[in-house]
Image (cartoon, rainbow, N blue to C red; front, side, top):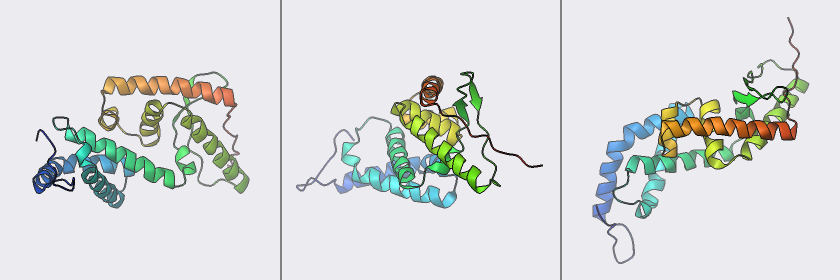
Length: 201
């Protein structure tokens, strides 16, 4: 498929649709696996997969023949997933940010996930803290922000992140390492501190 064939109206021809279907069949299993990694839910994964292929078909005239179709498809899936997440409430997802720095010593440390049985005032403080973390994360360049998000919040493997970002595992490792350092700087600059939560018993 050296060139996209269109009709007089500029629409993709039946031959191109048949080629797209062949590509869809070859990549569907891998694409579903990635959708499941992102959503952690079979039903949501199917919805994301469907949305991805619809968007891919609508934008198929921008696909460059000879390039890996799966990589192109996964980038569409990534954008679709992130768009969906932005429409949701992002605060609770911030609670799963496992890799962050402590302003007190500047070392990368884990932040425990909040106890489900928090008091009302404690829950409010944790929500504010989570929002501050999300705000700090949003200041990072996109490639670092997404690498940290997929690694520390979605707990995806380096290989899966590399597939999504269209790069190598080594580059993903580098982005996560560099991104955490940048995040540390933002946390320190903003004076973000995890609230002290009372423990009973």
